[in-house]
Image (cartoon, rainbow, N blue to C red; front, side):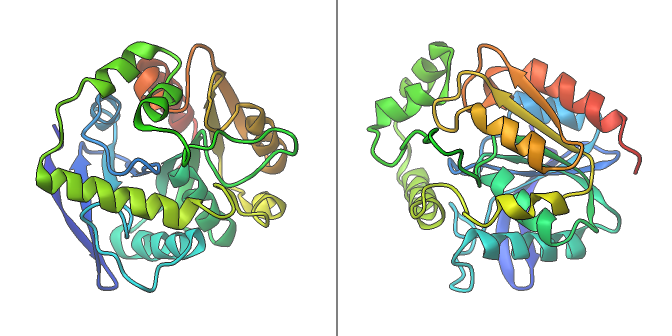
Length: 261
């Protein structure tokens, strides 16, 4: 369990946050599915680092400010958060949409980044390799296409129905996912040409069986981000920190141990 669940206010915008551990600091940015529960992956990281997991503005039970209308706005929000919350550079980890947000922030200013770890990030497109269109999938297709190992999908599908309060939070998360990912689908046509500006140590991890953002995209991240380290994970879909938690944790800790802060 996280040591603390609270609200974090940055320039008047209040978001939900989970905290745990101590040591060098990590900020984790979640994907389009919203703020996850305190995952085993988070618990393992918090044994070595101080971990902050935030719910993006416009998602779930966080504030939905009219000033935040795009992923670029979210990137600028997180630059403000980094300035306001941390006194020194931190390790930033982003999954899917969270990886896109982290990358958009990093091409603008890496002053507060000690390193960048991207887990199957959205944000770019490879010609001839379309992403999975999760906006047209029904709930079962959505669950099954997130994972290679269908045991994870079965567990998700078997989960009890959400409470009324949780259903409202999930609805707001779906609305936010549409807001930031609908058009164009999960990418910014201008992002790729600026990836060379990410000059902090960068680690890209991708499931080889990702049905949402194909692992072919990993090659482009490796080519465009200077000295990025790319790792493909066999037998893994779009959520490697869940489906291959032990492997991902081990690789991230090894990477971060090599980064000088």
